Length: 135
Image (cartoon, rainbow, N blue to C red; front, side, top):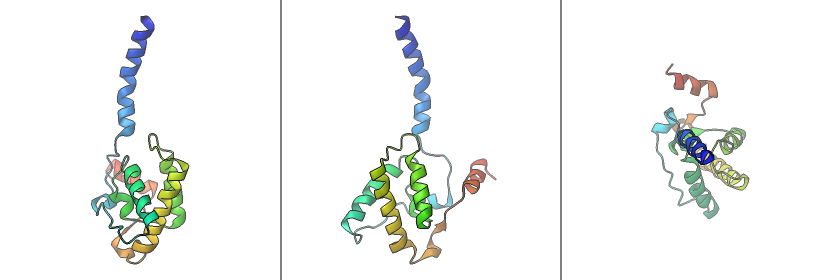
C-alpha cells in the first residue's frame, strides 16, 4: 500500500514536467509570423508525402511557419533536423528525419532560392536567446 501511494505521488509530480516538455516554445521568431502552409501540389509525390510528415512532426514543438519561412543552406538544415530529432518527445526516427531533411532541402532549392528576399535567414542560437530574454 505504501508503495502504491509513493507511485501515485511520484506520478502527480512528474505529470506537469511531461506536459511542459510537450508544449510548444513560447518564443516567437520573425519567421513564425509568416505563412504556415505551402502549396506542394506541383512537388513530386515523394516530396508531398515528406511535407505531410514534416508538418505532422515539426508542429509538435514550434510553428510550421518557422521552417517554412527560414532560409538555410543544406548543411544548416542537416544540423537543424538532427538537433530537432533529439528533442524530447519529437518522435522523429532516423528514417523520418531523412525524409524531413529531404523535403526541407527540396523546398529550399525549388521555392526559396528562387526568391530569397521573401524569406528570413536562419537565426543563430544567440539571437534566439536574446529574443527569449526580450532584448
